[in-house]
Image 1 (cartoon, rainbow, N blue to C red):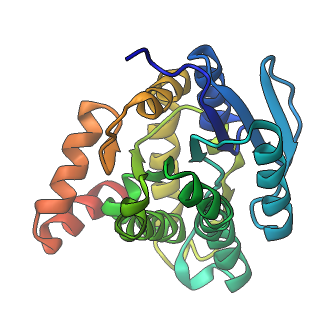
Image 2: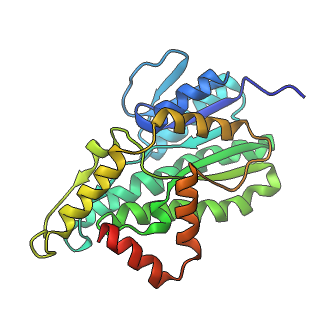
Image 3: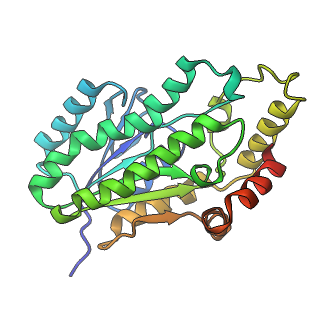
Length: 266
């Protein structure tokens, strides 16, 4: 059977970074791509819809617009997200909630908007972008790690809820990638003196790892190729290095894992 090349795919957070590279790769694969983001940065062959994933009404309206135009949705890729860093003690509840509102609840909002249609059409693929930080539990990036852990946990449960309706749910755990995410991180070193300079050292290590991380175009193609699979796995981890790290974090005793992570980032 010939591979379907006109899949209709929604990508959130498609104006920059991983989302933009994924949208571009999907277009190259012959997909009809709709990019949801707050900013309009034109990309040839990709349709931009102005959407804030924290705005449920805007998300629902955009999804309906895609359905009315295309009469189908084959896949949704939730890339929208941002990061904050700092000590839990010195992070405001407003900042913590904002992290979850975008990374976790934004993903949930988009998924809820497409699920009735996917269930009705009897097929579909939801791809939720998570992070190795979800299993590595990185200190001073606590709320980001927790938001991605919530994405992963929700995705595992959702996969079983919707499997009978022909809907696949996939988690993609990503590691360090060299994008504008680093510059956009909302950093705080409040309490650095009280924490013996550990906050600034940890964030500096994070940024070094990201700036020397994987090429986002490679990751975009990796994610786009997952959409091509007829029987996608529940979880993918990009690159052998991060597959090994993710596996270690999942099988090592908690005390050993935390000691290793603490030495690197604590």
